[in-house]
Image (cartoon, rainbow, N blue to C red; front, top):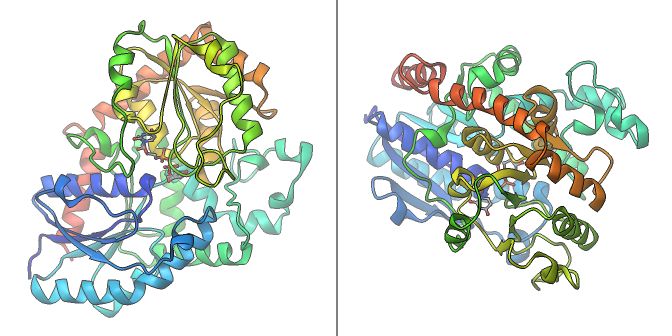
Length: 444
Ligand code: UDX
């Protein structure tokens, strides 16, 4: 048996696929051979990973299923549809080469039973962070206590079980199928407990106390081996085409003068919010680079989002709009002074690693919890607590980019950034955790 072959199964969403492929690259550098099973929906480009073996399976999603905005439905359908083709391809790989371990996204809950039936150890990667994952484990209790139905001013009440969260920070998924969402969450948690290990793209110095809670709750080996992006040469996992013309534009801007605005790969806003953001940016007088990806504005049936009249005239010469940016390179650019983010975990970690203060606009799920950690625990960002209004946006941008508050955040970020570098060096927490993960896999 090939003790050093690992089979990975990434979830086909940008924020999940990128860290999974990064983890595969990290374990490849530790001497493992890598096979990737992937759906034909949002498939990675094998040409970018010449050392890996790729196996495509049919996910049987119709066009409308693949493009649904209902994440719960998408995750449920993927888990249903992939069972048969995944089992077949995994058995085939195992009959040919022998496999030490299967590593899947936590959300691929159906794979635990497949792994069990083949007597193959399964390790899970949670691409969100430990602090939000622990909040997900409290959801049944929060529902029982009525926290999930809090409205109005009650949303600002604290959650005593999980400080510093407020009721509005509890991870919620907007779906037309709440019962299905409960089922997906329950299966995800149950099968994570049955896995042989749980891996996070985070590090002890950043989330030590949440990692302790995760260890207590799941009672399986937990490995915090992040930040992944600092341990791989470059990520080639973009599902959309990057518009690199923003780099020469950034080269021409003053140091720390540009606000980078991007809400990740899934979050969607309505036209009123879009206009509020546009006017806030225009009135801030600050240079900005804004990612308006296809689908960012809801309900336009594929049409490009119309910017409000007069907006472009106001921002000409100090702005750039792209459909998708090379984000890590942008955040590392000396011209960037702030990041207005939806608080996806990859974006936050990338911002921390590059020392960029944040404006938080969380939309759903872990983003809510992440935003609270950014503002109240790490204190490296601010948030519009009273909704999205252009006057507040304008003031918030100034607080981050111009005022003392932003400079103090940069000082706190310098410590986090340093920790993020030290933890992956020999003897560091993530370095040791990675060594333990390798030893754990080799012990199977
Ligand atoms: C999703 C969920 O929304 C998020 O809450 C969860 O934490 C992870 O899965 P997504 O919305 O895509 O992720 O956000 P994020 O985790 O920030 O990942 C986005 C990735 O796309 C980042 O690695 C970022 O660098 C990249 N990106 C984003 C680009 O390369 N270019 C862009 O223009 C925008």
